Length: 617
Ligand code: G6P
Image 1 (cartoon, helix red, strand yellow):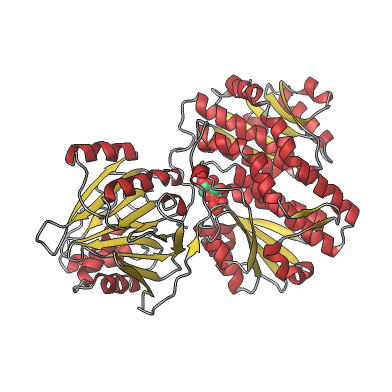
Image 2 (image 1 turned 45 degrees about the vertical axis):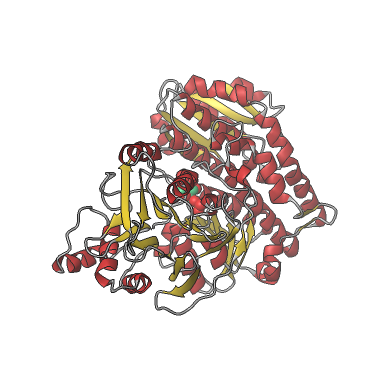
C-alpha cells in the first residue's frame, strides 16, 4: 500500500526521500510524488514545491529532471507512493496534496471515511478542490483549522476524522517543523544525528539510522531539527519507546538474484533454519516458544482455536487448523479476517485467536483481532515484522524470523508461518497428550525440512521447463486433498498474482462437483499427490482429469513409480510426515509461478494492482 518517507535535517532532502521511496516500492503503488520545502535567503517562511506523476517512480524522476535539473532545494521534504483508493490513477490525484489557504502540504496512507461530509463543509467555507481524493479533504481541513500552530491544527483536524491514516504534514509558515501522525496505518520515526527520517517501514530508514520508534494509534509527533515531541490527538503527552532496528541493509538488497521473489524462494532453507533455531529440542521431544510460554496453561486448557488472516496468511492458517485438530486435538477453525470481523462471531470461554500475518499491518486481520479481544479471547500473533501493529496488539506471539519479505508474492513468509504453526501445534500437543516419541519424530522431520527444500530447489531448471510448456495456457487448476488442499489454494494464488493467469485451487474431490466442466484439451492441472492418507483418492482424481484431456503436473514423493504413468509431468519432493508436507509441496508451485510470470514478461516484484501490505479494510 501507499509508501511514506519524510526527512527533516540539514542535508538536501530530495535524494534521501527518493532513495527511501525506492525501498518502499515493493509495497505496491500506482503513482508517486515528492514535496520539498526551501527557505529563500532572508525569509522566515518557506516555499513548498510539489512534483507528482502517475506510474512508476522512474516517471517521477524524469519529471523532476525536467522541472528541477539540479534537484528541488531544501532540507525538509516528503515523498509518497500512492495505491489508489479514492479517485483514479492520475497526476492530480497523486500525493502530496496542498491546501488553498495556509501553505499546508500532506501525504497520507489510509482512508478518511467521512471525507464526503467534510468536503461539503469545506466547500461551503469556500475551499476549491482539484483532486478526487480523501487526502485533499484532510489537507484542506488542516489548512482551515490552522491558526499559526501546525501541530495544533493537525491534532484538531484528526479529531474530526474517522478512518485510517498515517500522515506527514508540513507548512510554509513553519519551515522547521514536520508533523506526523498515525491511526491504523503504520508509521515510524527514525532518529539520526540532528536529522529525522519518517517512513512507513524500517526499510526506508535503515540506511540512515538504527534508532527508531513506531507511532501508536492517535499519536501525533511534532519534529523539528532540534528534537521531537509526541502527544495524542487530544494533546496529551506520550513517551514513545525508542528501539534498535535489527534489519540488515543486505537483507533488503537483491544481491545476485534477478528478483526479490526469486531470492526469497531460494532463501527458504536458511529462513526456516532461523525460524527453528533454539526452538526445537529433539532429545526432550519438546518445542520451546519463549513468546507464548507465559500462556502455556491457557493453551493447554484452550477449548477452541480460531486462526485468522488474509491471502497467503489465511492459507497457512488453514494448514494450522488441520494440524491443531489432528495433532493437538483441539477444535480449530481458520477464517478470513474480513469475514470473521463482521459476522458477529461467537467467542466462548477459553478461545484462543491466532492472527497470522507477514506484515503485521493488514487492516482486516487487525480488525478481526480487535473484535476477538473485545469478546474475551486470548490473542496470539504469528507475525514476521517485529514491533508491527498485530505484534503489539496481541497478548503473546511467535515471530517467523524469516527476514524482510520484499517480493509482493509471499513465499518465505508462507513456509515460515506453517513452520511456526507446526511448532505451536507441538507446543500444545505435548502438553495435552502427545508422547515424547511422537513429538521427537515430528521434530526430526521439522529439522529435515531446510535440507529437503534445498533438494527441491536443485530441480529449478526442470521446473522452469514445466512452466515453459504451459505458460501460454490461460486457465489452470491446482488440486490437493487434506493438508495439501490449502497448499493448492496457495499455488493458484501465486500463479494469479504475478503471471495474471486465471487459476483455481480447490480440494481435489470438489473438482467433479462442477469445475470438471472446465477441463478441455491440454488444460494444465497441478495435482499435489505426495504420499499420504488420501494418495489413492488423489490418483483417482488424476485419472478423471486425464480422461478429459487435461495435462497433469504432479507433485509427488520421491520413489513413487505409479505417478510417472499417471501424469504428463512429475516434480518429486523428498518424503516427509504428511502434516508437514505443505512446506515442501509449495516450493515447486512457487517456482512454476515465478518462471511463468518471467516468461510472460511480467515484473514479478511489482505485479499490477497488488499491494504487499493492505492497510485498508
Ligand atoms: C496482501 C498481499 C498478500 C498477503 C496478504 C496478507 O494481499 O498481497 O501477499 O498474503 O496481504 O498479508 P499479511 O502481511 O497480513 O501476511
